[in-house]
Image 1 (spheres, rainbow, N blue to C red):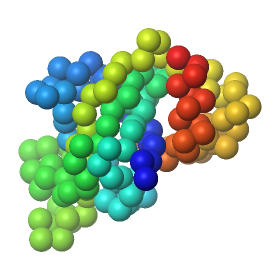
Image 2: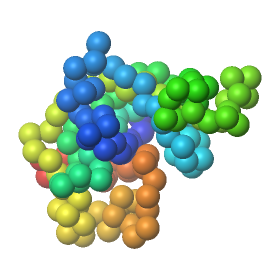
Image 3: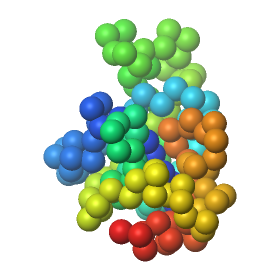
Image 4: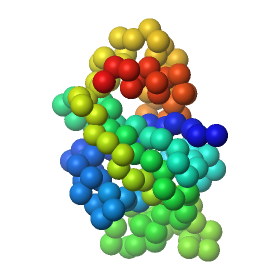
Length: 153
């Protein structure tokens, strides 16, 4: 059964246009260093799952596009790279601490569906993204929430 997700990225680090311009419009989603988000990538994300691409920590945070999971969770090799900002000395290739998935560009939305707009919709009152204090970079989205958000485009 297909699942739905929201994944956040700061657009100055990796934006929807960066994904669009990658070979095969596909990229690994690396650098997640939160155990709860890691567990979602490791245990719950499956091939074909649909994902909102969310630009965070920018002038107008919001949902900007859609991507699809095209490779299920596997070790985040950047955790082993001494020269990478995501290096983790406690992560071991034999027992990796961090995971990633590969995502493929599906589309850029006709407009950004802003966080401000999402917060104003009663239909999204239980949406994890708008709960106070929620800082996770990966969030589950229900089918009902997914369909409603797409209707806003």
